[in-house]
Structure formats: structure tokens, C-alpha cells
Image (tube, rainbow, N blue to C red; front, side, top):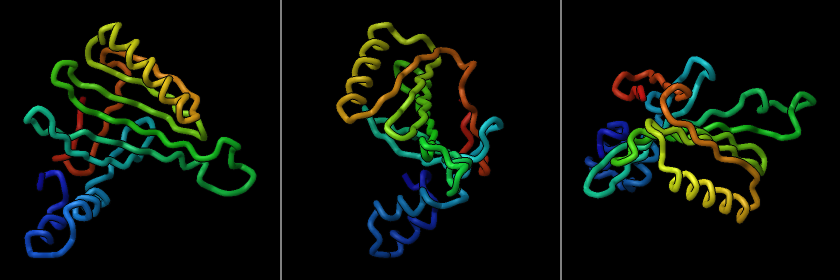
Length: 168
């Protein structure tokens, strides 16, 4: 776990600092040197590594977030839809392989694209689509979910620190 966060946060807890592990992890995840990433098409992203533990294995889910800078200013050029946030989650599933969830959130709208290395079974696609759209409706969102297989449309992130690079 210590390798997922900036050493300073864990060094504080080892020295008897009363900072909770949760606070130390949040501080580490907000470290600007740790969370900066970019891709050639969109530009700067913030990367938040999230440790996961399942079936005795640990891995890191990576959450990338990009705020649309063109809508952050006040004035007449601001659109009626408001701020847009794009996010991408990358992880590797033991049976399904590498996956990437790409989302675009706008006011009361969420559009998703689920990318997978290999074609997902049709029953799984239907279950994910059905539960996602039902969840959207239950909380008052509009939106869609699309599925893509293969790596042709994947977003490849590059980090400022080589140890954090993700090439999927």
C-alpha cells in the first residue's frame, strides 16, 4: 500500500503523527507530482490511483479526471450546459482482461463508453446496459452507454513520473 501513495504521507504515520490513514492517503493522492498525466488529444488530466483488494490480490484502479477549461470562465461565452467533466477509469479484470470506462458528465447527463481488450459476452453487455440505464433513471440522469472492443479507441496516458505510466 505504501507504494501507492507519496512517501511523505506514510512517513508521517510511521513517525507517530496522529493523521489517520484515510487522511494520509487523501493527502498523497492530492500530491501534484503524483496526479498529473496527459494524453496528446485532450491534454492535462489528474490521475487518482485507487487501491483495490479482491480475491487475495491487490491492484490499482486508476481514475483520470479532466475538467473542460472552456466552460470554467464566467460571462457570456459560458454555455448553458455548464461545466463538463470527462473521466476515465482503467483496470484489469482477472477474467475479462484490461478495461477502460470513459465518461462525460454534464448537467444531469452522463455518457459512458466501456472499452475492453476482447469482445464481452452479449449477456454481460445487456446486463451492464440495463442496470446502467436503470440507475440513471433512478437518480434522474439522462445518458447512454456504448461498448467497444479492441484497443483502437483507447486513451493512452503519459505521466510525469515514469513509475506511474500506464500504457494499456
